[in-house]
Length: 89
Image (cartoon, rainbow, N blue to C red; front, side):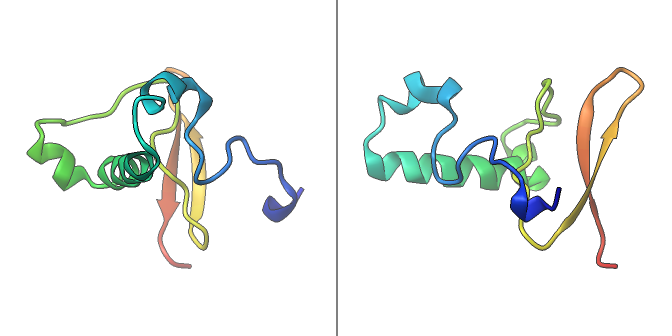
């Protein structure tokens, strides 16, 4: 199946349902800002380091995929799935 023919896991611009409780406390303007900044922070190791965060752990992918980039999803020896961005080919 081509990526453009695939099914969305979550809709871009909508908060994931598992965060509904947190997001219900934010007004519409703050929700958009919250998610924009969360994704920006998650993809910026230098900014994370400024907040004392040296690693993000979990059993989900903590990276927003971007159109036009090539990703390889790898599985670690412990069974964790993680993406790597392939440099320009």
